[in-house]
Image 1 (cartoon, rainbow, N blue to C red):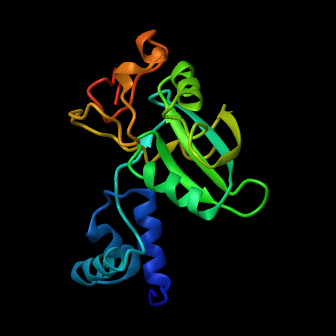
Image 2 (cartoon, rainbow, N blue to C red; image 1 turned 180 degrees about the vertical axis):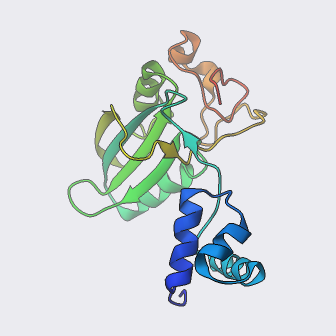
Length: 192
């Protein structure tokens, strides 16, 4: 359990959310502490895993396509297996476990609508996984307020098998250039 945060912690978080590269001295001035005191607070926030400072990608500038997927899984076991299998999938931005008719949502990305369609239909898709009872796919047309997303960028494409276990080289849509391939494999043809 994290100790409660105070006004200075909230100011630090606010400043880092505005600009994760802002200087410690600038934050220190804003909160009325020394640079060393501010650094200790930031280190404590990071060390307690209350915050994480990292690069986000502007999906509007890259013209990335997004979709929200809603799924009903048959059991907790099926959900845990799906989450484990897709934990390292670079196309999934986030999973959300919910209650109600649909118990799992995913926010996914692709370079174009053909690839977005491929990741909703092919063997690498969430729809094709064991235990998925219902599946709905909603392409996102606009993002409001903040176009920065936590896309998993894999710089070195060394693997032939995608993290989900699929081999893109056998995929018909990939062969017909209707899919950019998995961004973590040697087959990837996209921009990231």
